[in-house]
Image 1 (tube, rainbow, N blue to C red):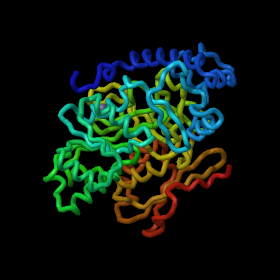
Image 2: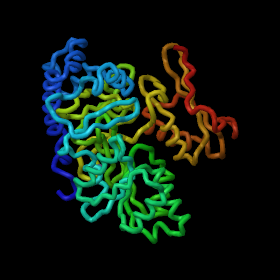
Image 3: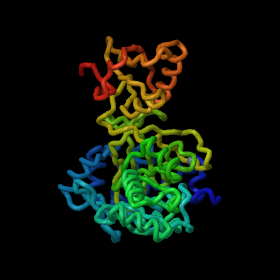
Image 4: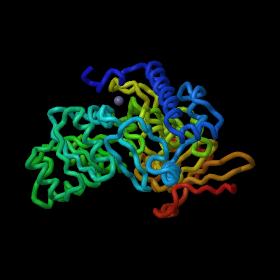
Length: 417
Ligand SMILES: [Zn+2]
């Protein structure tokens, strides 16, 4: 059992769903009673709390984007009427907009599951390099670190020189912050004459708020001996997903319901298809049902080797505005970058057109070596393309070296709407 934060992480899907459905029903009932805004949303959509019996019923409710939440809060400051007036709030956070959020109860496991999965515990001294001012990051990561027993150095956004000093003097073992800031801390340490890998004991890093690019990850792990983990969440809903030691998708937190939806309709896509991450945090303080993150991902339903049974998110594929829909499935530039990475950064481009009523997906690839275009290569390319994008290639065109410029768009939508 030591491998898991709590027994919930090993629950069967059936038990997890039953528990979450019950919590959802309670949240909806309470929200309808305590919040005039929730009641108004339900009334506008002609539904009653009793109509929400399970996560599948959430589709009856609208998705609320960050932009929409800002508008609602402007109309009705500070929380758009979505909070529970009967509960005293211990802290209030802001995020750009401004959006205000009442902090979840101190008993909430915010980020603790992520730190536990990253192997952070009572023997660690963790540098928390997220801002402690106004925004939720600093304090919420801090409390998650305390929940797993780590000692926290609340360094916040102090200069990289100060961070290096703290890592050295306090024998810091773990870093929590953005990957780019850790890079600048390492650069500063090198500039100050240290050998980061040899001179310091920092061996683990948990990142959020920025993408961790594969090259960056490789460098942290190989060049500096730092085991890296990704975490995902949003101020409005708290922690959403986190990586385990398998580093093969991000486990969805037990406290949240995550839907992957078509941003145009708000309806769930099939498992494995790309769509917008929509989060409902099960709680009794802030009744934000179906928060639309604007981020794109896919659900992985296979069982993870770590023992956690929760479904996983396949990272973030981009923002909803970047994606193009082909035969009902979204593809995003980040997916094409993943394919390029698997083929030695092969220059390629996707063109989407329409013949009659059918979408046609054509891939243009530069013939940078003789292997490209052979039957074996083509088979392999099409298989990997389908695995990553879930969409089939209709046409493959080979173009001469230099035809696709680095500044060209990765996906061109030629369809007329
Ligand atoms: Zn796992």
